[in-house]
Length: 186
View (tube, rainbow, N blue to C red):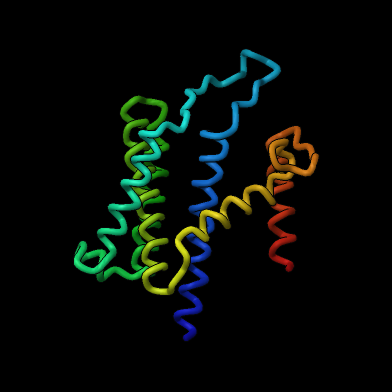
């Protein structure tokens, strides 16, 4: 029982961290418009990536692929892997993402980073599916939890915030950390 509780906590921690990263990236990259810098010389150009039906179809296809691999009669390796083992794979992919980041800003580094981020996303989604299979977790719950966490911890965002202001990255980080501390004390 202790092992199950511990692994459930570890899985929740990893899921929360990874999904927080994924959800934050999705919210800030795909949904929200870029913030304009007052000083145009320091503004970083950014490619817009609108959510297209092709992208959503790709996400749906990844989910179908994962479900097929995990369900009985699917992939023999996936049928036997545990959530704990998947956390090890997830950790390895995080290391590979860090290594790929070191190769930026080259085009080859960007391509490698895209591949590694895809692996990280796939492992995160696989972990959710495995926890769902092994422990009955509603696979949509981590997405909802990540979305709600980002909203709670970014009260300065005009789209959902409470009117708080974060004039600098350090102030935004401080607000995030303060919200996290309040949540941990509950």
